[in-house]
Length: 517
Ligand code: NAP
Image: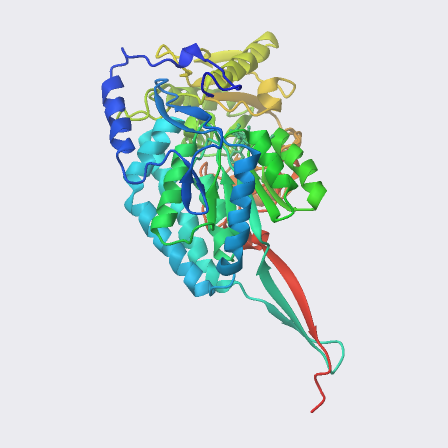
C-alpha cells in the first residue's frame, strides 16, 4: 500500500486496523517485539549501507490479517536501482575472484544465521504475508535449504576437458559467473523465492540486486541483514524496493546487469522478456501455473484427498504450484467430492498467529475480488458451490475454503490461476481425456496425479506437458530437485545441481601449439 501524500497514494479503507479483533493486542505486541529485533530493517540495502529513497518517499507495509501498518519502507525507483547496480558491479570484481571454498563458508554462515533466527523470520513472514506461523516456519527452513545446498554446490562448479580434434591442441571448458544479477521476487514466498535465486548466484561468484514485492519487503531486508552479519561483503547483495516498473526498467536497461531472474506473474514475465532484448540479457522466469490434479478411479481415496488438500490449500491457495483444477474420474467423482469437502470443512481459518489455524487471509482486496469473480463466472455457467463460496465472517481478506463441482474447461476457474482457497472439481471418463484436459492450457508448471497403477504413473507423467509431476503426493518442492515450468510457465530451473547453471557462462579455451618442445 503506498503512502498518502506520495504521487502513488492509494488509500484502502478495508485495510484499517480492526481493533476489536480478539488477538489484535497480541499481534501488535508481536509486531512491536519484531521491530526491536536486531534483524528488523526498514531501509533499502545498497553497497552495505541501509538507505532511504532519495526523495524520502515511503510505502506502507501492512499485515493482511488486521490491516495494521507494520512499517514504512523506502519507495525507491530507477536512481537507487542504478546505485545498487554500481555497487554490485564493483563488488563483482572481488567476490568472483575469491575461492569457491571461501564463498561456500560465507553462505554456510548465512544459512546458520537464518536457521538460528528461524522464529523471528517466521513471525515476520506471517506478519506481512499472512500465512500461518507453522507454514511460515516451514518456509524459513525451505528457504534456508537453498543457501545450505548452494554453499555445498559452490565447490562443485567443474569445467571440462574435451578430447582435441588436432594433435597440437588442448580444449577446455571453463564455467564463470554471468556477472551482476537482477532478482525480482513475489510476495507469496517472501524468503524462499529470494534464497532460491541468491543462493546459487552468490555460490558461483555473481553479485545481486534483489527487488522484493512491495507487499513483503521486511523478510527480504531481514535476510539481507543476516547476510551482512554472515560477513558477506558490502555490495554483493543489495535490496531495493518501491516503484516496480521503474526498478525493473533500470535493471533491464543497464548493460552491467547480465541476467534477470524473475518469479511472478506470466504477464510481468513477458514484459521482462521483451525488455531484456535491449541488452540481450540472460533470463530465468518462474511464472504462473494452472496445475491439474488428476484423481483416477484406481487411486487410494485417503491418499488422494490428503494430497489434493495439501496441493490446493497451502498458503490459502496462493502458490504457483497450487492444484488449480482437480480433475476426477467419473467412477470416484462423488465419493471424492464428499470426502474432500469434509476435509476442506475442517480447515481452520484465521489469523496466522492463532494456534490451529491453517488458512490465513488472502494477500489483499484485489485477490478476494478475483476469487469472487471466478466463482461468479463458474456459477453463471452451471457449476455448483458445495462448500464455502463467500467471504469469511472474519472480514478483511479472509475467504471461506471452497469446493465447486461440475466445473468445465471453459470456465475461468479452469482457465486461469484462481490464487485463492477454491478447489474446482472437473470430471473425466478416460485417461486420454484426463491428459487432454490437463494439457489444455498455456501453463506448464506443476501437475499431480493420484493412481495405484504403476504403468499409468509412467504413461501419464510422460504425457503431461509440465515441469514438475507429483505422483500420490501434493507437496513436492525441495532444494535438491529442479523446479521450473514449460510453455508459458517459464524458462530455466531453480534449485538442485541444475539450478546453478543459470548463473554460469561457459567459456571454451583452445590452447594451440601444444606439441612443440
Ligand atoms: P507479479 O505481480 O508479477 O509481481 C512479482 C514481482 O514483480 C513483484 O516484485 C512485483 O513488484 C514485480 N513487478 C511488477 N510489475 C513489474 C514491472 N513492470 N517490472 C518489474 N517488476 C515488476 O506477481 P505476484 O502477484 O507478486 O505473484 C504471484 C504470481 O507469481 C503468480 O502468477 C504465481 O503463480 C507466480 N509465482 C510463480 C512461482 C514459480 O516458481 N513459477 C513461484 C511463486 C509465484 P511489486 O509487488 O512491488 O509490485
